[in-house]
Image 1 (cartoon, one colour):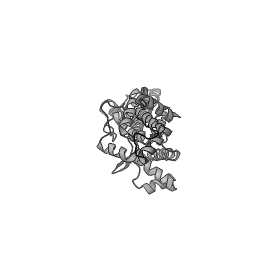
Image 2: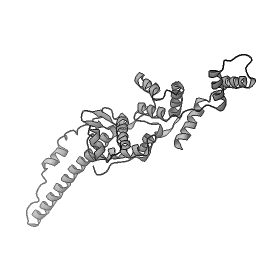
Image 3: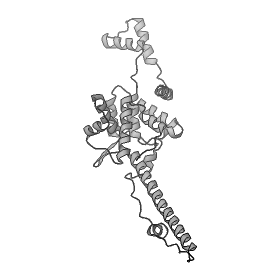
Amino acid sequence: MKHYPHHIGDFNGATRHLTRIERSVYRDLLDLYYDTEQPLNTDVALLCRRILANSNEESTAVKQVLKEFFTSAKLGWYHDRCEAVIYSYHQNTSQKALAGKASAEAKRLRKQQAMAGTNGQQPLKSVATKPQRNLTNHKPKPEPKPLTKDKSATRGSRLPANWKPDSELAEWSKTERPDLDLRKVFAEFTDYWNSVAGGKGVKLDWNATWRNWVRSQKVEKQSFAQQSADVVRNTVAISPSYDSALRQIELDRKTAVPMPAEIRAKINAVLRKA
């Protein structure tokens, strides 16, 4: 392929969490995929050489991008959207080629008829050639279907009503970010994506979207009062006679009202755009 469609909004939405090197590597891998019109080689070292990823940081970015956006298969690293675009390109090219051949044959016959008519002969009757018969009298051979099983997978969908991380994904989340309250994070995740309007709320892979969401969560910093209360609680035995200031700090900590989930989701959305 000499060119392929690049949807800026879709690309930015899917790669906003990546570093600049990872985004650049992802574009290079897409270019290589469309240029060869086949899945990428399973040899990661060879891929790094093909796209000039020579440093350790660049080769690590290649591995990370392959793992997140591509699927490992027997034929190589497979990409759903690339396969769908390549299939559509070949289907359109085949139709144009058949139409061009039919048009050329029709011009040749008209010229032959005109030449015959000037010599006093009867105009030749148009005889359908083999390509024309295939277009009019017989059904053309079906084009091979793309490797994707479900066309809706290339279009994406909104967050399903009953979606939640499976056991494997939940275990990954605990390992990746042990500092998070995953129940609270999940509530913010569902509230945010259910409230997003339009195409921005449509994703190809909600498991990948969840992983990106977990990775992008910022470490919550405790207030000075909370830090002080934790130090006192962990180092000094609490008794009824301990300092009144410390007693007030502990009381404030217990009576503090957590930030509503919808407010936190809006704040996180603003931070991502920043």
